[in-house]
Amino acid sequence: MNIIEKDINLNDPGIAFAMDQAAKNPYMIFNGIEVEQLTVDHCIVSMKLRDEQKNPHGTAHGGVLYTIADTVAGLLSRADGRQYMTLDGEIHYLRAASSGKIYGEGIVVRRGRTTVVMDISIKDEVGKELSRTTITMFCIGKPQG
Image (cartoon, rainbow, N blue to C red; front, top):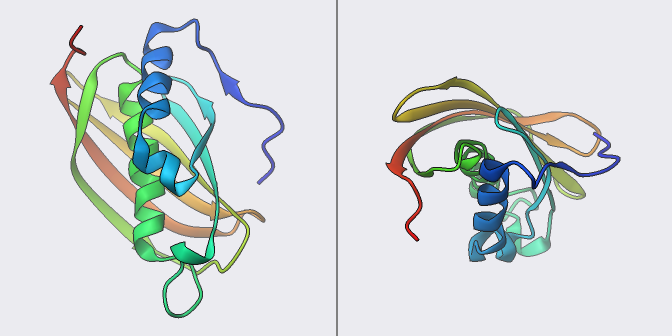
């Protein structure tokens, strides 16, 4: 999967809000997750796999793959300018990765009044799918301030 240039429209208030939240997210920063593309219904993030993110078998820890998926879901849901929290998620692990960049790509399946359902695919840098996740986010309201 090759990302040529970042596709993020900061003139859109919802996208700007989501990106501001990402810039302040210590867990995203700690894991080295970068936003490559973000629209109201599509998101791609990337992360360079580090040794401390691997399991004892030398491959990406399952929690790292879920972290990427949950990050995509958080960005996608907040792209409408509202605050969300994870309501539920189901992940299917398909294959392992031991090095390189990992990409998470998500689409909105349904955006309702109080919930957003998203499908997220995690792939390695050659495009092999590592996991498939469905996450539902619950709206907790507009940002304060």
